[in-house]
Each structure stands twice: as C-alpha cells, then as structure tokens.
Length: 322
Image 1 (tube, rainbow, N blue to C red):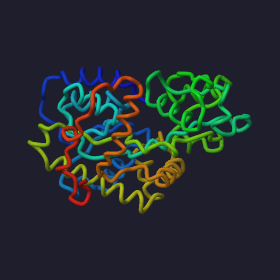
Image 2 (image 1 turned 90 degrees about the vertical axis):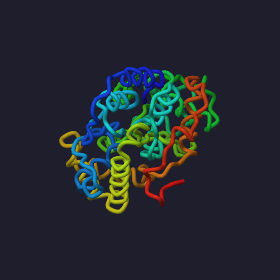
Image 3 (image 1 turned 120 degrees about the vertical axis):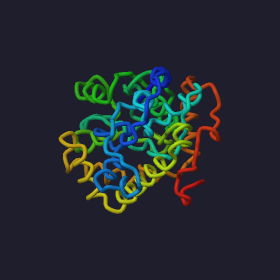
Image 4 (image 1 turned 180 degrees about the horizontal axis):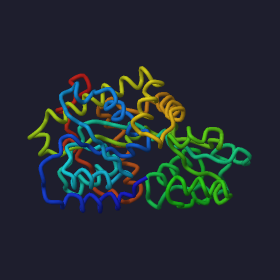
C-alpha cells in the first residue's frame, strides 16, 4: 500500500508537467493488468461500454498505485484516473487541481493476513508473541493491521510487527519462516488457493474507500461529457460483473492476458462479488472519511479534508448522486 508521503511527492512531480492536449482515448487505473481493481475497466473495454456511452477509450495505463497513478494522469494529461483514495486526499490537500467524480473500490476487505497451513497460529489472538508483516512503515497496510489487532483486544507491543516490502516479499518471508502472518490480496490469493490459511481479514473494521475515480476541475468544465461517459461505462461494467461473475472473470482474464489465468480470474471475481468490492460509482462519504481517519492515525494527514470541494458528483448518473 502506498505511503502517503510518497503519494504527495509523486503527485507534486507529475503536476509540474507543462500542459499538453488531453489524450482523450486513454485513462490510467491503479493495478490494471495485475489486480482486481481494474476489473470493471477491463470488462467495459471488452464489452464496448465506452463507445456505447459516447467516449472513445481504447487504452489503459496500469500503475503500481498511489502517487504513480496521479503522476501518469498529470504527466500524460489524461482525462481520468482511478487512484488510491489516500493519494487523492494527499494531492488535494497539497493544493492540486483534483476532483473525485466517482467511488471505485469501496472496501479493503480484499486484504487478508495468512499463515502456513501447519502453523500454530489459528486466529488473530494467536499472534501475541509472534511476528506479523506489512508493506512499509506508516502505510495503509500497517495502519489497518494495527487497527485489526486493537479491535481484537491485542496490545500492539505484544506483536512483533515487521515492514517487509511488497506483498510478494512478505509471502516469501512467511514461507521461509521469517514471519508468522503476511498480507495477501487478489488475485494472488486465488492463484495460490490452498497454499495458505487465513488468520484474519478486515471485515470487522469500518468500511474504507480504497480507490476513487478522479479528474481535474478544468476537464470537468471543458469536457464533462467525457467524464460522464467514462463513469457510465464503468457503472455498466460493474453491473455486468455482479450479474455475471463467471463471464466477467473470463473477460478480465482476456484483457489482462498471460498475467491472469482464466480459472484464477473467475475465482477472484467471485470472491470480490461476495464482499461487494466494486462500487457502481456512488459516493460513500463514510468510507472516504474512514480512510481519512486511518491516514490521520499515521500522523501524515494533519489537515481536515474539504469534502465539498474535493468531491464533484455532477457527472454521476442521477440515481447515484448522494
């Protein structure tokens, strides 16, 4: 999960790029081609939803998330990006021209902490005196794992918490005995089905908005129909995923290519449907506020968020406006 300071720094770098004509046929989406975050856009492309809604989106840039996504949007002068909510908040509070136009991923429940099948760690309470890994200091993964421990009545100092880097590094350490619980997400969890045992997930924490769709106020003024079409196309794709998870899994695998086998994609989609992972676009302020509160907890968010200025619902379908 992206560190908020890095999000700010990269957003600053990207926003400094000299303006060029908007590349209206391309957008950028966190995790596209690798994670389930980009599933709706993959389905929208495969089903021609963008053209049906009057926009010619033919290419999608993937990114590792956070500030990288914003850098790609600003640097490429792209009309729209799906970005970590934390990065959107950071960029806005730093004074950049960014507006949230739709919700994208409405929960962090796709994150789980796992152990090896033969481990004596059966539940979160068994982590007392054991080792738990997350990605990096002051990251969202550290914050929410701490929150989960506290919600279970466990004192943080009673667990040896380790920053081990990317998800794959944590899992490698788990398999080599370097930690007792490591974070995993989809579709890696479905790809390694049966390889690990879940110790805990985040279902008992307040629902937090994971990613949002963003643009700039300039684009909202000059090309509102582009944003309206993108949001509508994505909404149609999400509706299709929930109604047809197996077929949606095939479409996502087709668009992602060799990185995502069809059987893994179908399992992952079904798992995400079960937790109501993808938003149709409606703004869920409570989830965004919960994410802001988690960032405040890290000490990196010190300024209140002006949600009325950050959020623009003007291009949402009328039935999704809140």
